[in-house]
Length: 438
Picture 1 (spheres, rainbow, N blue to C red):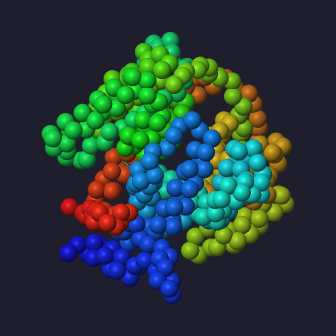
Picture 2 (picture 1 turned 30 degrees about the vertical axis):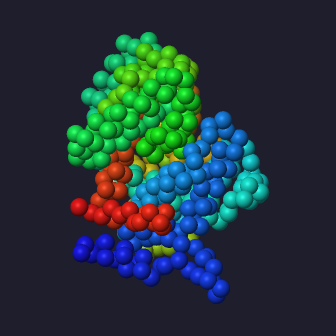
Picture 3 (picture 1 turned 90 degrees about the vertical axis):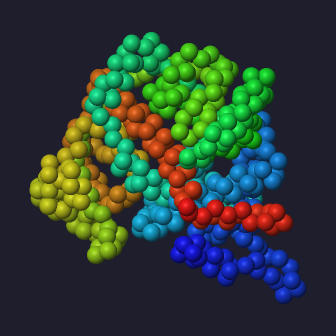
Protein backbone atom coordinates (compact mmCIF):
# COMPACT_ATOMS: atom_id res chain seq x y z
CA UNK A 1 0.00 0.00 0.00
CA UNK A 2 1.17 3.54 -0.76
CA UNK A 3 2.85 4.90 2.38
CA UNK A 4 0.92 8.21 2.36
CA UNK A 5 -2.39 6.40 1.77
CA UNK A 6 -1.60 4.11 4.72
CA UNK A 7 -0.77 7.15 6.88
CA UNK A 8 -4.05 8.83 5.95
CA UNK A 9 -6.03 5.70 6.79
CA UNK A 10 -4.17 5.40 10.09
CA UNK A 11 -5.06 8.99 10.95
CA UNK A 12 -8.68 8.30 10.06
CA UNK A 13 -8.74 5.20 12.26
CA UNK A 14 -7.72 7.21 15.32
CA UNK A 15 -10.00 10.16 14.56
CA UNK A 16 -13.40 8.49 14.57
CA UNK A 17 -16.55 10.48 15.47
CA UNK A 18 -16.52 11.36 19.16
CA UNK A 19 -19.40 10.27 21.39
CA UNK A 20 -20.64 11.91 24.56
CA UNK A 21 -21.28 9.79 27.64
CA UNK A 22 -24.89 9.13 26.61
CA UNK A 23 -23.89 8.11 23.07
CA UNK A 24 -24.71 11.47 21.48
CA UNK A 25 -22.65 12.21 18.36
CA UNK A 26 -20.44 15.26 18.92
CA UNK A 27 -18.71 15.49 15.56
CA UNK A 28 -17.76 13.28 12.63
CA UNK A 29 -15.24 13.21 9.82
CA UNK A 30 -16.60 14.17 6.41
CA UNK A 31 -13.31 13.86 4.48
CA UNK A 32 -9.84 12.41 4.92
CA UNK A 33 -7.28 14.50 3.01
CA UNK A 34 -3.79 12.98 3.00
CA UNK A 35 -2.68 13.44 6.66
CA UNK A 36 -5.56 15.74 7.59
CA UNK A 37 -9.27 15.37 8.22
CA UNK A 38 -12.24 17.70 7.75
CA UNK A 39 -15.03 17.45 10.32
CA UNK A 40 -18.73 18.12 10.01
CA UNK A 41 -18.50 21.10 12.38
CA UNK A 42 -15.76 22.69 10.25
CA UNK A 43 -17.87 22.15 7.13
CA UNK A 44 -20.98 23.54 8.84
CA UNK A 45 -19.09 26.69 9.84
CA UNK A 46 -17.88 27.29 6.29
CA UNK A 47 -21.34 26.67 4.85
CA UNK A 48 -22.75 29.14 7.37
CA UNK A 49 -20.26 31.81 6.26
CA UNK A 50 -21.21 31.25 2.60
CA UNK A 51 -24.91 31.53 3.41
CA UNK A 52 -24.31 34.78 5.33
CA UNK A 53 -22.38 36.18 2.36
CA UNK A 54 -25.35 35.48 0.11
CA UNK A 55 -27.95 36.68 2.60
CA UNK A 56 -28.97 39.79 0.65
CA UNK A 57 -27.96 38.67 -2.82
CA UNK A 58 -30.25 38.00 -5.73
CA UNK A 59 -28.09 35.02 -6.60
CA UNK A 60 -29.59 31.91 -5.03
CA UNK A 61 -27.49 29.14 -3.58
CA UNK A 62 -27.90 25.53 -4.75
CA UNK A 63 -29.70 22.89 -2.72
CA UNK A 64 -28.11 22.22 0.70
CA UNK A 65 -26.56 18.87 -0.30
CA UNK A 66 -25.03 20.38 -3.43
CA UNK A 67 -23.78 23.42 -1.51
CA UNK A 68 -22.15 21.14 1.09
CA UNK A 69 -20.42 19.18 -1.67
CA UNK A 70 -19.06 22.33 -3.35
CA UNK A 71 -17.83 23.80 -0.07
CA UNK A 72 -16.27 20.48 0.95
CA UNK A 73 -14.45 20.24 -2.40
CA UNK A 74 -13.04 23.72 -1.80
CA UNK A 75 -11.94 22.74 1.72
CA UNK A 76 -10.21 19.64 0.35
CA UNK A 77 -8.19 21.73 -2.11
CA UNK A 78 -7.34 24.18 0.68
CA UNK A 79 -6.22 21.36 2.99
CA UNK A 80 -3.90 19.94 0.32
CA UNK A 81 -2.32 23.36 -0.20
CA UNK A 82 -1.92 24.01 3.53
CA UNK A 83 -0.26 20.64 4.06
CA UNK A 84 2.17 21.35 1.23
CA UNK A 85 2.84 24.82 2.65
CA UNK A 86 3.61 23.33 6.07
CA UNK A 87 6.16 20.92 4.60
CA UNK A 88 7.81 23.90 2.88
CA UNK A 89 7.95 25.92 6.09
CA UNK A 90 5.61 28.67 4.92
CA UNK A 91 4.24 30.69 7.84
CA UNK A 92 2.27 33.93 8.21
CA UNK A 93 3.14 35.78 11.42
CA UNK A 94 0.65 37.70 13.52
CA UNK A 95 1.92 41.13 12.40
CA UNK A 96 1.25 40.30 8.75
CA UNK A 97 -2.11 38.79 9.65
CA UNK A 98 -3.08 41.85 11.69
CA UNK A 99 -2.28 44.08 8.72
CA UNK A 100 -4.45 41.91 6.48
CA UNK A 101 -7.33 42.08 8.96
CA UNK A 102 -7.00 45.87 9.08
CA UNK A 103 -7.18 45.96 5.27
CA UNK A 104 -10.31 43.79 5.31
CA UNK A 105 -11.97 46.05 7.85
CA UNK A 106 -10.99 49.14 5.86
CA UNK A 107 -12.39 47.68 2.63
CA UNK A 108 -15.70 47.33 4.47
CA UNK A 109 -15.50 50.94 5.74
CA UNK A 110 -15.11 49.78 9.34
CA UNK A 111 -12.61 49.85 12.15
CA UNK A 112 -11.17 46.46 13.07
CA UNK A 113 -13.17 46.26 16.34
CA UNK A 114 -16.32 47.20 14.42
CA UNK A 115 -15.56 44.60 11.77
CA UNK A 116 -15.05 41.94 14.47
CA UNK A 117 -18.32 42.88 16.18
CA UNK A 118 -20.17 42.70 12.84
CA UNK A 119 -18.89 39.17 12.17
CA UNK A 120 -19.81 38.01 15.66
CA UNK A 121 -23.30 39.55 15.31
CA UNK A 122 -23.76 37.53 12.11
CA UNK A 123 -22.93 34.31 13.94
CA UNK A 124 -19.40 33.93 12.52
CA UNK A 125 -16.72 32.71 14.91
CA UNK A 126 -14.10 35.47 14.77
CA UNK A 127 -11.02 33.40 15.74
CA UNK A 128 -11.94 30.86 13.05
CA UNK A 129 -12.45 33.63 10.51
CA UNK A 130 -9.09 35.14 11.43
CA UNK A 131 -7.35 31.78 10.96
CA UNK A 132 -9.06 31.36 7.60
CA UNK A 133 -7.58 34.69 6.51
CA UNK A 134 -4.16 33.43 7.67
CA UNK A 135 -4.70 30.26 5.62
CA UNK A 136 -5.61 32.31 2.53
CA UNK A 137 -2.34 34.24 2.90
CA UNK A 138 -0.40 30.99 3.31
CA UNK A 139 -1.98 29.50 0.19
CA UNK A 140 -1.32 32.65 -1.80
CA UNK A 141 2.34 32.56 -0.73
CA UNK A 142 2.56 28.88 -1.67
CA UNK A 143 1.12 29.49 -5.14
CA UNK A 144 3.53 32.38 -5.67
CA UNK A 145 6.47 30.14 -4.79
CA UNK A 146 5.37 27.02 -6.68
CA UNK A 147 3.90 28.64 -9.77
CA UNK A 148 5.29 32.17 -9.72
CA UNK A 149 8.84 30.92 -10.18
CA UNK A 150 7.75 29.08 -13.31
CA UNK A 151 5.91 32.01 -14.92
CA UNK A 152 8.18 34.18 -17.03
CA UNK A 153 7.20 37.27 -19.05
CA UNK A 154 9.45 38.19 -21.96
CA UNK A 155 9.98 41.57 -23.60
CA UNK A 156 8.71 40.02 -26.84
CA UNK A 157 5.39 39.12 -25.18
CA UNK A 158 5.05 42.66 -23.80
CA UNK A 159 5.86 44.16 -27.22
CA UNK A 160 3.31 41.91 -28.90
CA UNK A 161 0.59 42.79 -26.40
CA UNK A 162 1.29 46.54 -26.64
CA UNK A 163 1.24 46.32 -30.44
CA UNK A 164 -2.14 44.59 -30.28
CA UNK A 165 -3.49 47.19 -27.89
CA UNK A 166 -2.15 50.07 -29.99
CA UNK A 167 -4.10 48.78 -32.99
CA UNK A 168 -7.21 48.20 -30.91
CA UNK A 169 -9.46 51.18 -30.22
CA UNK A 170 -10.85 49.33 -27.20
CA UNK A 171 -7.48 48.93 -25.45
CA UNK A 172 -8.48 51.10 -22.48
CA UNK A 173 -11.81 49.39 -21.86
CA UNK A 174 -12.41 47.11 -18.89
CA UNK A 175 -14.89 44.26 -19.14
CA UNK A 176 -16.95 42.65 -16.39
CA UNK A 177 -17.34 38.93 -17.08
CA UNK A 178 -18.88 35.88 -15.49
CA UNK A 179 -17.54 32.43 -16.27
CA UNK A 180 -18.63 28.78 -16.14
CA UNK A 181 -16.20 25.86 -16.43
CA UNK A 182 -17.26 22.30 -17.21
CA UNK A 183 -14.08 20.55 -16.18
CA UNK A 184 -12.26 17.62 -17.77
CA UNK A 185 -9.91 15.31 -15.86
CA UNK A 186 -6.34 14.97 -17.11
CA UNK A 187 -6.12 12.35 -19.86
CA UNK A 188 -9.90 12.41 -20.35
CA UNK A 189 -11.33 9.66 -22.53
CA UNK A 190 -13.39 10.46 -25.62
CA UNK A 191 -16.51 9.43 -23.70
CA UNK A 192 -15.69 11.87 -20.87
CA UNK A 193 -15.01 14.65 -23.37
CA UNK A 194 -18.33 14.08 -25.14
CA UNK A 195 -20.23 13.96 -21.84
CA UNK A 196 -18.65 17.24 -20.68
CA UNK A 197 -19.36 18.90 -24.03
CA UNK A 198 -22.99 17.78 -23.88
CA UNK A 199 -23.29 19.24 -20.37
CA UNK A 200 -21.68 22.52 -21.51
CA UNK A 201 -24.16 22.78 -24.39
CA UNK A 202 -27.07 22.26 -22.00
CA UNK A 203 -25.76 24.96 -19.64
CA UNK A 204 -25.22 27.42 -22.52
CA UNK A 205 -28.72 26.69 -23.81
CA UNK A 206 -30.14 27.64 -20.39
CA UNK A 207 -28.13 30.88 -20.41
CA UNK A 208 -29.36 31.80 -23.89
CA UNK A 209 -32.94 31.09 -22.75
CA UNK A 210 -32.57 33.77 -20.06
CA UNK A 211 -31.49 31.83 -16.98
CA UNK A 212 -29.53 33.82 -14.40
CA UNK A 213 -25.91 33.26 -15.40
CA UNK A 214 -24.55 33.77 -11.88
CA UNK A 215 -27.01 31.17 -10.60
CA UNK A 216 -25.94 28.78 -13.35
CA UNK A 217 -22.32 29.27 -12.32
CA UNK A 218 -23.11 28.52 -8.67
CA UNK A 219 -25.01 25.35 -9.59
CA UNK A 220 -23.04 24.07 -12.59
CA UNK A 221 -19.51 25.46 -12.74
CA UNK A 222 -16.50 23.39 -11.71
CA UNK A 223 -14.30 26.47 -11.42
CA UNK A 224 -12.90 27.66 -8.08
CA UNK A 225 -14.99 30.87 -8.41
CA UNK A 226 -18.30 28.98 -8.75
CA UNK A 227 -19.67 30.07 -5.37
CA UNK A 228 -18.99 33.70 -6.35
CA UNK A 229 -21.27 33.25 -9.36
CA UNK A 230 -18.28 32.87 -11.67
CA UNK A 231 -17.48 36.56 -11.20
CA UNK A 232 -14.26 37.58 -12.98
CA UNK A 233 -14.49 41.20 -11.85
CA UNK A 234 -13.37 44.14 -13.99
CA UNK A 235 -10.47 43.39 -16.34
CA UNK A 236 -9.02 44.65 -19.59
CA UNK A 237 -8.78 42.19 -22.45
CA UNK A 238 -5.06 41.90 -21.74
CA UNK A 239 -5.74 40.76 -18.16
CA UNK A 240 -7.96 37.87 -19.20
CA UNK A 241 -6.99 34.34 -20.17
CA UNK A 242 -6.00 34.36 -23.83
CA UNK A 243 -8.89 32.11 -24.84
CA UNK A 244 -11.40 34.68 -23.49
CA UNK A 245 -9.68 37.81 -24.79
CA UNK A 246 -10.39 36.85 -28.41
CA UNK A 247 -14.14 37.02 -27.79
CA UNK A 248 -14.75 39.85 -25.33
CA UNK A 249 -13.95 42.79 -27.61
CA UNK A 250 -16.80 41.81 -29.96
CA UNK A 251 -19.37 40.96 -27.25
CA UNK A 252 -22.12 43.30 -26.09
CA UNK A 253 -23.59 43.61 -22.59
CA UNK A 254 -25.57 40.46 -21.78
CA UNK A 255 -24.02 38.39 -24.59
CA UNK A 256 -23.15 34.75 -23.93
CA UNK A 257 -20.13 33.31 -25.71
CA UNK A 258 -19.84 30.15 -27.74
CA UNK A 259 -18.35 27.16 -25.89
CA UNK A 260 -14.59 27.65 -25.51
CA UNK A 261 -12.27 24.63 -25.17
CA UNK A 262 -9.10 24.64 -23.04
CA UNK A 263 -6.95 21.95 -21.36
CA UNK A 264 -9.07 22.41 -18.22
CA UNK A 265 -12.39 21.76 -19.96
CA UNK A 266 -15.18 23.72 -21.64
CA UNK A 267 -15.82 27.38 -20.77
CA UNK A 268 -18.79 29.71 -21.24
CA UNK A 269 -18.53 33.45 -20.53
CA UNK A 270 -21.15 36.18 -20.31
CA UNK A 271 -20.59 39.92 -20.62
CA UNK A 272 -21.91 41.84 -17.62
CA UNK A 273 -20.75 45.31 -18.66
CA UNK A 274 -17.84 47.50 -19.77
CA UNK A 275 -16.16 50.78 -18.80
CA UNK A 276 -13.13 52.78 -19.98
CA UNK A 277 -10.38 55.16 -18.91
CA UNK A 278 -6.60 55.21 -18.36
CA UNK A 279 -4.27 57.51 -16.43
CA UNK A 280 -0.85 58.58 -17.66
CA UNK A 281 0.39 61.02 -14.96
CA UNK A 282 1.54 59.25 -11.80
CA UNK A 283 2.91 60.33 -8.43
CA UNK A 284 6.40 58.95 -7.88
CA UNK A 285 8.71 58.83 -4.86
CA UNK A 286 12.48 58.30 -4.90
CA UNK A 287 13.38 56.25 -1.83
CA UNK A 288 15.98 53.96 -0.34
CA UNK A 289 15.61 51.37 2.40
CA UNK A 290 17.30 48.80 4.61
CA UNK A 291 15.60 45.43 5.17
CA UNK A 292 16.34 43.04 8.02
CA UNK A 293 14.61 39.66 7.67
CA UNK A 294 14.20 37.52 10.84
CA UNK A 295 15.62 34.00 10.61
CA UNK A 296 16.60 31.01 12.73
CA UNK A 297 19.53 32.94 14.21
CA UNK A 298 17.80 36.32 14.66
CA UNK A 299 14.32 36.63 16.14
CA UNK A 300 11.73 39.12 15.01
CA UNK A 301 12.43 41.41 17.98
CA UNK A 302 16.20 41.15 17.52
CA UNK A 303 15.83 42.11 13.85
CA UNK A 304 13.78 45.17 14.85
CA UNK A 305 16.33 46.19 17.47
CA UNK A 306 19.24 45.84 15.05
CA UNK A 307 17.43 48.02 12.54
CA UNK A 308 16.69 50.59 15.25
CA UNK A 309 20.42 50.68 15.98
CA UNK A 310 21.22 51.27 12.30
CA UNK A 311 18.70 54.11 12.19
CA UNK A 312 20.28 55.75 15.23
CA UNK A 313 23.71 55.56 13.57
CA UNK A 314 22.36 57.20 10.41
CA UNK A 315 20.73 59.97 12.45
CA UNK A 316 24.11 60.48 14.13
CA UNK A 317 25.84 60.97 10.78
CA UNK A 318 26.63 57.48 9.42
CA UNK A 319 26.21 56.98 5.67
CA UNK A 320 22.86 55.36 4.79
CA UNK A 321 24.19 53.79 1.60
CA UNK A 322 27.20 52.19 3.30
CA UNK A 323 25.06 50.67 6.07
CA UNK A 324 22.51 49.42 3.53
CA UNK A 325 25.21 47.78 1.43
CA UNK A 326 26.58 45.86 4.42
CA UNK A 327 23.38 45.09 6.37
CA UNK A 328 20.32 45.02 4.10
CA UNK A 329 18.79 41.63 3.30
CA UNK A 330 17.33 43.08 0.10
CA UNK A 331 20.39 42.11 -1.92
CA UNK A 332 19.05 43.63 -5.15
CA UNK A 333 18.94 47.16 -3.72
CA UNK A 334 21.80 46.70 -1.21
CA UNK A 335 24.43 46.85 -3.97
CA UNK A 336 23.07 50.32 -4.77
CA UNK A 337 23.09 51.49 -1.16
CA UNK A 338 19.45 50.53 -0.66
CA UNK A 339 18.36 52.74 -3.58
CA UNK A 340 14.94 51.77 -4.97
CA UNK A 341 14.78 54.47 -7.67
CA UNK A 342 11.51 56.10 -8.65
CA UNK A 343 8.53 54.26 -7.15
CA UNK A 344 5.04 54.71 -8.58
CA UNK A 345 1.90 54.57 -6.45
CA UNK A 346 0.78 50.97 -5.89
CA UNK A 347 4.16 49.48 -6.77
CA UNK A 348 5.16 48.54 -3.21
CA UNK A 349 3.34 46.47 -0.58
CA UNK A 350 0.74 48.55 1.35
CA UNK A 351 2.72 48.71 4.62
CA UNK A 352 5.77 50.08 2.83
CA UNK A 353 3.84 52.58 0.74
CA UNK A 354 1.86 53.88 3.73
CA UNK A 355 5.02 54.68 5.69
CA UNK A 356 6.87 56.05 2.65
CA UNK A 357 4.00 58.40 1.77
CA UNK A 358 3.91 59.77 5.33
CA UNK A 359 7.55 60.95 5.25
CA UNK A 360 8.97 64.34 4.35
CA UNK A 361 11.81 64.52 1.83
CA UNK A 362 15.00 63.54 3.68
CA UNK A 363 13.15 62.00 6.62
CA UNK A 364 13.98 58.45 7.81
CA UNK A 365 11.16 56.27 9.11
CA UNK A 366 11.02 54.36 12.35
CA UNK A 367 11.39 50.58 11.85
CA UNK A 368 8.20 49.07 10.45
CA UNK A 369 7.11 45.56 9.50
CA UNK A 370 5.94 44.01 6.24
CA UNK A 371 5.67 40.46 4.96
CA UNK A 372 9.37 40.64 4.04
CA UNK A 373 10.66 41.64 7.49
CA UNK A 374 11.64 44.94 9.15
CA UNK A 375 12.41 48.10 7.12
CA UNK A 376 13.55 51.64 7.51
CA UNK A 377 12.99 53.89 4.51
CA UNK A 378 14.20 57.36 3.56
CA UNK A 379 12.48 59.56 0.97
CA UNK A 380 14.93 61.53 -1.17
CA UNK A 381 12.60 63.15 -3.73
CA UNK A 382 9.08 63.27 -5.14
CA UNK A 383 7.58 64.17 -8.53
CA UNK A 384 4.61 63.88 -10.85
CA UNK A 385 5.74 62.06 -13.95
CA UNK A 386 4.27 61.33 -17.36
CA UNK A 387 5.07 57.64 -17.35
CA UNK A 388 2.75 56.54 -20.14
CA UNK A 389 5.29 54.28 -21.81
CA UNK A 390 6.63 52.76 -18.58
CA UNK A 391 3.12 52.38 -17.20
CA UNK A 392 1.90 50.64 -20.33
CA UNK A 393 4.79 48.20 -20.26
CA UNK A 394 4.37 47.56 -16.55
CA UNK A 395 0.64 46.98 -16.90
CA UNK A 396 1.19 44.73 -19.90
CA UNK A 397 3.75 42.66 -17.96
CA UNK A 398 1.43 42.39 -14.95
CA UNK A 399 -1.50 41.41 -17.16
CA UNK A 400 0.48 38.70 -18.93
CA UNK A 401 1.81 37.37 -15.64
CA UNK A 402 -1.63 37.34 -14.02
CA UNK A 403 -3.10 35.51 -17.00
CA UNK A 404 -0.33 32.90 -16.97
CA UNK A 405 -0.57 32.50 -13.17
CA UNK A 406 -4.31 31.83 -13.34
CA UNK A 407 -3.97 29.32 -16.15
CA UNK A 408 -1.11 27.49 -14.41
CA UNK A 409 -2.85 27.60 -11.01
CA UNK A 410 -5.98 25.94 -12.39
CA UNK A 411 -3.91 23.10 -13.86
CA UNK A 412 -1.68 22.80 -10.79
CA UNK A 413 -4.63 22.53 -8.38
CA UNK A 414 -6.22 19.88 -10.59
CA UNK A 415 -2.99 17.85 -10.64
CA UNK A 416 -2.56 18.27 -6.88
CA UNK A 417 -6.07 16.91 -6.29
CA UNK A 418 -5.67 14.04 -8.76
CA UNK A 419 -2.34 12.93 -7.24
CA UNK A 420 -3.48 13.07 -3.60
CA UNK A 421 -5.37 10.68 -1.36
CA UNK A 422 -8.86 11.97 -0.58
CA UNK A 423 -11.72 9.99 0.98
CA UNK A 424 -15.17 11.57 1.20
CA UNK A 425 -17.51 10.67 4.04
CA UNK A 426 -20.11 13.37 3.59
CA UNK A 427 -22.89 10.86 3.06
CA UNK A 428 -22.24 7.87 5.34
CA UNK A 429 -25.05 5.79 3.90
CA UNK A 430 -23.78 6.05 0.31
CA UNK A 431 -20.38 4.48 0.95
CA UNK A 432 -16.94 6.02 0.84
CA UNK A 433 -15.84 7.79 -2.30
CA UNK A 434 -12.04 7.58 -2.41
CA UNK A 435 -9.38 8.82 -4.77
CA UNK A 436 -5.79 7.74 -4.34
CA UNK A 437 -2.58 8.45 -6.18
CA UNK A 438 -2.11 6.62 -9.41
